[in-house]
Image 1: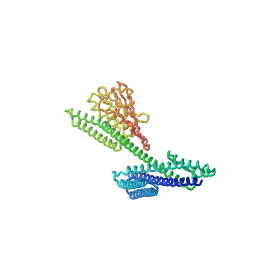
Image 2: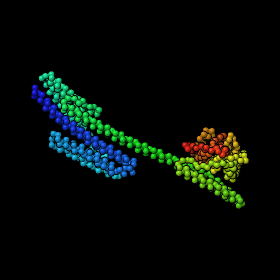
Image 3: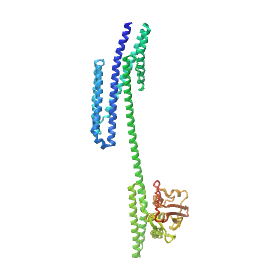
Image 4: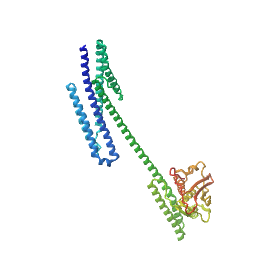
Length: 508
């Protein structure tokens, strides 16, 4: 009976020593793995700070390097603990030497990682520390799993031995069976369930601390080991999540930069289209004025002076247009500077008509101011208003069937100045009229070299001046454009011009 009791006791004592040693090695390996992971997280965090805030990183670089060295020294202490435990465990000499050599190799690799990480923090982009560190982490994870697997196998072997031994001892007395059941089988069963749960990845499982002092110690050590492995696993998951967030943030920044570049390119194309369109009409008038003057062999000095005056006035207009377009390009917004002041709309329209008289009459046509009061004051920008009138008259000339016939009328209607410009041209199909104020939209009869910008620019300017512009047309009968602008109000009534619609600029 004493022999039967002594044999299980001897086996249990030896198994407990082996399990305790394996548990200690697994715990030390888990601590080393956690130190490696903390070093990797520190490295990624510091290098990310180096790119996000280079100035602050440069000022605190020595502190960060000291932190890296501290983490490396901490990992070295855990490696020393593993070497000490390997030396104390009963192993064959070649196997023990191989294990110790492996730990020394990890120590050298750790020193290399620390040195490369310091070089990377000093700006060396070729310092490769990630590959070596990930290899060390992977090797340490394999080592930790091996220790856990060995612990599991030892526990299972000890459990099986005790089951057979206790079956024999149970014959000797019920009391011995009860004592054994309470002090040995139950704790071993708890340890077995715990090791199986951990082997399946369930780190929430904990072993109840019951049984003899030795089993209580094993259970406490086992639970501490599981806690450290669980912490290491959570730390690794957090590291992966941080890396994924960093990649997503960089991807979003790159997408935003691409959108900004695309928008800048679109505004550049719109600016070039507006510039080509706005300069075309004054240039055409200047060229026609010069050609008509040169064809008149008997032109008087007064005729020549009048022609040159028009050329000078249009040249100044073109200079103002170019300045406005340069302001638009610098601001990357299709909005023009306007100076609102009281002006006589009748005088402004007459000036525009005078600019077109000789050009239209040379083609056998006419342009007339058929209705207008003696004077009608509005709040507007004279230069911008003339620009709108020129755009509409130029369209009327371009889209006339034969000799251009243009009638202009001015009247007061419902507190606004109404300007109507009517031509007897081809007319516009009803389905095309809603699209003509969109950028790059032209009528079905694409006469001339325009880009479909005039009406869009005219609408944008008119709305900026606080007015509205509309168009009515009948096919083969002609087109009428109506411009409404606010009359001059009381001296204390501020003007509130509309902002131009920059989402959809267009012309004909």
